[in-house]
Length: 117
Image 1 (cartoon, rainbow, N blue to C red):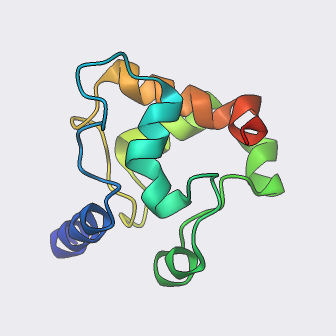
Image 2 (tube, rainbow, N blue to C red):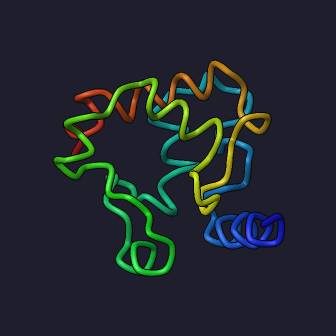
């Protein structure tokens, strides 16, 4: 299992989405900027993952109606903190601080997530 998790971290890092350091280090970080720098490589810049990520890793569409119907900041926060049950999504607890995790979770769960251009 540890080999799978390590492999996934290498894969996500190679895609540019998991450098574990937000692109705007030192500046106030928003949920939107965290999503863009850490999540968009797998989930897509608009929350719709590239087809290859869906097929290879089962990455979820964050804009799908069934997800939006049940999404809460707490649900997203848990996923970001602990990663997926399958361990294909890495845990970001320890890599992001509590405020950053809460910010990205609130952003993904908000109506603004779908409302951006």
